[in-house]
Image (tube, rainbow, N blue to C red; front, side, top):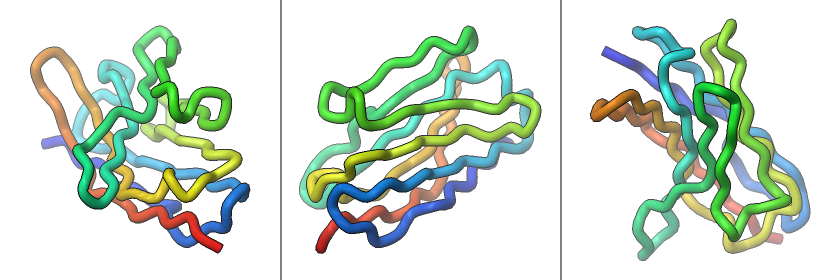
Length: 115
């Protein structure tokens, strides 16, 4: 079993920064592609950012140049640095770990952006 635990969510004003963290256990962290997804009310879950085994990253167009994903293999942790937050960023954010056809999800953390 792979367990993913997200933390760092909360209420943030527009323009503020926030960092989400995801701690993984139960497997070899470095062998998984790690990603952050989000799901807003009335919308489907979408990919926010992903980081691959070689450190390469991929971002959704809506968060490019604002969000940064990083991983620390020694600590089995992945982070999402979110700058210039907008009301449209309000959603439940989920951590994901994937290797081949296997995919694991955290329970999510709520991020609310409002004044």
